[in-house]
Amino acid sequence: MRIFVAGGSGTLGRRLVPLLVARGHQVTATTTSPGKLDLLRQMGAHAVVMNGLDAMSVGETVASAGPDVIVHQMTALSMAHAGKPDLKHPDRWAATNNRLRTEATDHLLGAAAATGVSHVVAQSMANWYGGPEHGRVIEADPLPPEEVAPKMRKSVEALRYVEDRVAKANGVVLRYGPFYGPGATDHVLDLVHRRKFPLVGRGAGYFSWVHIDDAASATVLAMEQKANGVFNIVDDDPAPVGEWLLHVAACAGAKRPVRVPKWLARLLAGEIAVKMMTDGRAFSNAKAKRELGWQLRYPSWREGFKEELA
Image (cartoon, rainbow, N blue to C red):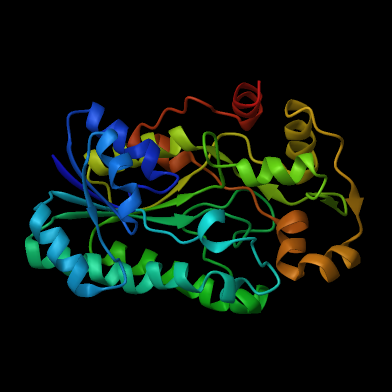
């Protein structure tokens, strides 16, 4: 198939594009930076510069590529682009990313309709938000109400928007858990080594990690099978911060993380950071495994981080 990967030079795109090429697909991959064109060519893709926030740029680039499938992997949350995360003001920090989830999604769906592309794959997040008080979050569980996180209202609305728009277009939305693996957790490891990633309270908030290569393999399955709807893309082993952070520090040869009370963390990092560290919910990957036949190379972050940091 002819595959159009919007955002091919991003963290996931760099693992996804070579995988698609290896499976015999003809890949056109985009970047916003001319300096990354050679990187995409080295991965085997036809490389082009595209501005996802410009409808004309998107329309012309998609029309020229003539793809069978469009994969939306454009983000603006990398450390290099956005700098240090500002969890006290998440909507302000993620403003460009939110536009990519709304405006750029519309541009890609419009280009797909105009050129007869039958399937679109887009990304969302499986993070601390939403879900029941007990048990794992499934795809049918709603995203959080605005009062849960008022300072990230626009970010939540952007997630709702991309999930709703792509689902209505019979596409598929993949809710990726936090990535780890090559190029995905350098900032986390830097903070761990500098003891700048503390345990907040009891560290009871769950993270549902996924290795970057497992995320890429799930994306390929969703694309090749032309699945539709929403899928959580996380590993089998959601774990509280108090468990995984100690493991990562030990694997990295770093000192044990410091522990800070909630009130102090609230002053230093804001309410959202405290919620993530103390109140995050575990996500279920049962639907992706059942319906996509997804098999994880790294079923647990325990083995994955150990191998990555060996």
